[in-house]
Length: 230
Image 1 (cartoon, one colour):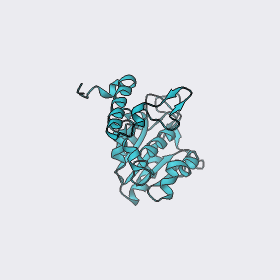
Image 2: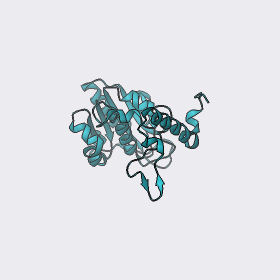
Image 3: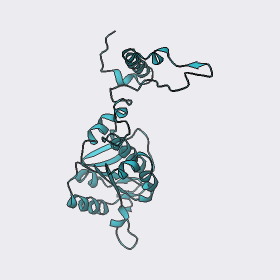
């Protein structure tokens, strides 16, 4: 998989792409992640990428010319499955979307900045708009990292235990169950007996029931379209 990220502050990505899971995936050769400085395609002596909005108003808007130049240059080099714009008014980024994207070959991720992005960029270049929640950040860099992490960790071979990703929250439409490790008793708090029983079928049943209970308590909306046998 290859992910190309376009940003006005590319240095933001230096450490996250060298460390942790994304760094591991890159070192293994399982994922290529390239960051492009939008200012490289900026206008004039100062490589300008933004300007004041037509009609007045506070804030600055990213101009279309630098973004078109950057994305069209990438499209001339290879085919991309999606050009993704991280924006608060996009569709909510969910696990099932991460699952689908993990099976793609090449992705472009465009990070917003300043007040807004010229609408013509979104109309002509962007194929998918995603939001990480009902909150406004200073730019799309953090959401882009979230997307890259969520997608890359699903690529076979990235995680030491590939099955781990399949049992995460949201994969089965519910939150994950509670997990425990040693010691079996800590400050008077004990691990459920069933987890110490060695009975794998009972353990699996307990985990399913616990996951359902936690989902009902914390995110009942996830179960609204689900039918359960009592």
